Image (cartoon, helix red, strand yellow):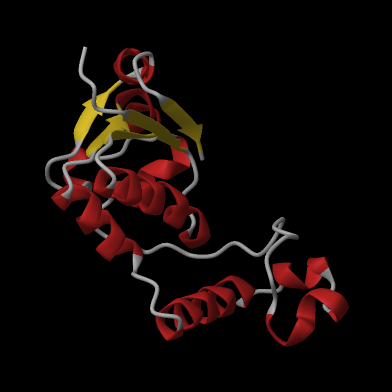
Length: 160
């Protein structure tokens, strides 16, 4: 058994705001010398598509800080107004850029460069009739058993 520490991550969310945690944690762990694998399942598969058209979903996300103190006066139901998803996505992207935060694509590229193993859940790909050609090059496909084989020997396992 290797002395190298291992991190296993399950990525299940496919929105812009939920794309950051698995890629930030994976790239940081890899930079610290960890061997890292991310298993993308269900909506998390959006994070390994070639076309990253990710959006923020403000609906049902009461912890999301709103601009201009909107979280104090704007009703949660208002986030369901048509167009709010696009507005919130644009605002989030602008905020990230203004603060110098890397884009999801840049973070994903960092992970690939750091040899983070990216695995797509084959069952979910089949369930949603996804075409493997929609996904990035180098992505591996496997089932839950593939993940457990790695996670069973990991030092840290995260569900995101």
